[in-house]
Image (cartoon, rainbow, N blue to C red):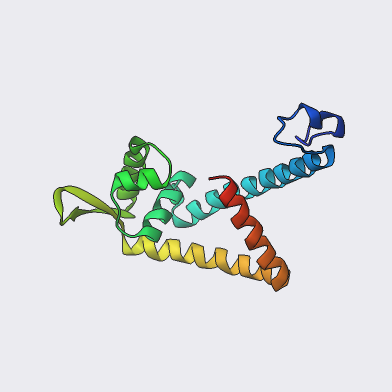
Length: 166
């Protein structure tokens, strides 16, 4: 592997084998891995920017939590932890921060008065929806340059990848 993380042709054999793959297939997979790394770095930067658009002190993890609450509607903390594949204590800490910022409030669960739902405030919903609308506009603007066939192919490949990684 070179200093960029790419697999050199001779190093492909050092990677774990998964079936009968060729060196060129391994290099193609390494190229996909490199593109995912670039994509994840862009997503990380974008999450930081989205969070700061909502509030200058909001961290990316808090934005992820808040946007999930906005998208899902009122939700129990345990369900939120499961949805985000995280520990309930992380949810609890982040919710306290979001409550202090005025973005999340607790609502009593009418079916179990001992439990509560986490709900986004109207201000949070408005701000998250503004950020989402800007992101969606950028995505549409970018992908419209590709043409319908390429966009459909991308959707098919992403669906296939999501099925494999479950």
